[in-house]
Image (cartoon, rainbow over all chains, first blue to last red):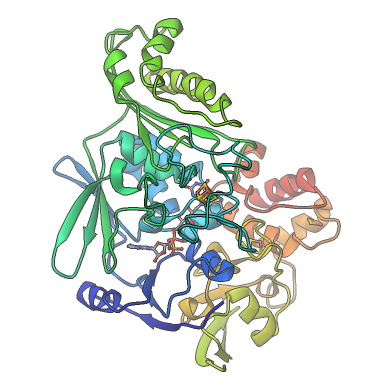
Amino acid sequence: MRTFDYTRVRGLEETLAALGEPGTQPIAGGTELVNWLKEGIEEPRRLVDINRLPLRDVGFADGVLRIGALARMSDVAADEIVAARFPVLAQSLLLAASAQLRNMASIGGNLMQRTRCPYFRADTAVPCNKRAEGSGCSALHGDTGAAAIFGWSDRCVATHPSDLAVALAALDAVVVVRGERSERRIPASEFIRLPGDEPLRHNELRAGELITAVEVPGGAERSYYLKVRERASYEFAVVSVAAVVRAEGGTLTGVRLALGGVAHRPWRLTAAESALVGVDLGDTTALRSALAASFTEARPLAGNEYKVTLAQRAAVRAIQEAAA
Amino acid sequence: MNQDTRLSLTVNGEEREIEIDPRATLVDALRDRVGLTGTKKGCDRGECGACTVLVDGRRVLSCLTLAVTVGGAEITTIEGLAGEDGEPHPVQRAFLESDAFQCGFCTPGQVLSAVGCIAEGHAGSPDEIREWMSGNLCRCAAYPQIVAAVSKAAVR
Ligand SMILES: Cc1cc2nc3c(=O)[nH]c(=O)nc-3n(C[C@H](O)[C@H](O)[C@H](O)COP(=O)(O)OP(=O)(O)OC[C@H]3O[C@@H](n4cnc5c(N)ncnc54)[C@H](O)[C@@H]3O)c2cc1C
Ligand code: SF4
Ligand code: FES
Ligand code: FES
């Protein structure tokens, strides 16, 4: 691990000024960053401890839920309004990581986490365009079992592991970021980036910017987060589904769906969302054929065709559970 | 290069002044600088729970905590759980009675995680305990006995 200086900050202006210095990174819960320091994935010259900034509140006002970027995953999941009005959000948090990690990990840090692609996390250097641009992609010609089926490029086929991001995408949430001069509001479904030609750009945050909050409109009482994984707890998703539904008399009148584990960002199923309106909740065959509308563009790799089937079946169940 | 800075840590109610590199994790600071080796280092990557301690009463992983970030906080390790008379903590007693360990390497982390789990109100049933203790792996697979010990301690 390379040496770095450590400073604590208390105010927003002070933080933004500090982040303006090259080689500076904020640290929140440290559950990603400390691993990156150990692996040499990041080598900052200075760490700025942002944990004393007043960005921990969770509150609902004027029809919008606002979550401070430094609120801890465990505290957000336990918040009464979140649990009652945004079940999909609480579930996405409680099904992630472990109790200890959720006590440490912040909402902003969660969205900043990086892929769990084993080649990216390797402790000896192997070709990986997300580690060293131009070095190649070991996964593309290696084990593609965990890789993306949507939105990948020949530069990188990784998926993004955040459960929270998937729930936020289905909820049409907004990520609020502050730079030294201005504030930007980025749709949660676009905050994490597809690899394209720039796999090194993991997300939309620019140098010197700080995530200050996440805003979630309205309520989503009928919603559900389904996480399919290789063991029952303390594991990343193979595939996950966030479903937010409206229904009248057993018929769907509105659906918002996002998938995790299938792309390097939460994958909204917009075509299926339209096709699902008017479909009877008990009619599994009709639900399946409406969902198929969003899977014509799936591009599975050698080892992950199973995800195309798994994701559609999981989506059917998530819709039915959300409406129940 | 020696980059050590002075750090004051409150461990098990006692204030300790140590010299520490900003890169040091809390588990290393506790074991190598404070001299309390009860906290174990398993994976050093946040994956096993062996290094669990309480910081301001919350269970966290000391291998992913930089020691400098908890200056001023109250840290509780396995050495600080027993009562003043040396009487084991109720969770420690339940682990003994239920035979909830074999090699014992994961045990300090299990015990502190169990203290957190019970305080959070997540020890109501065996299923709930299994879910909320899933961050603590046990290579000896003493899981049934661990769940029994946590259940027992929760009702005391
Ligand atoms: C064993 C293990 C299992 C896990 N399982 C899951 C899982 O199942 N699902 C899941 O979703 N996640 C999982 N995680 C990931 C975990 O949720 C993240 O590590 C955590 O949310 C990161 O938050 P943090 O506050 O610790 O971030 P830090 O480690 O402090 O920071 C991470 C990055 O974000 C930057 N950053 C932090 N806060 C801000 C901010 N406000 N503005 C701008 N930049 C910021 C930091 O500079 C750093 O680059 C797991 C992690 C581990 C170690
Ligand atoms: S999939 Fe992406 S992260 Fe994984 S090896 Fe290829 S370039 Fe690296
Ligand atoms: S040593 Fe900290 S979680 Fe394994
Ligand atoms: S008792 Fe041996 S690892 Fe748990």
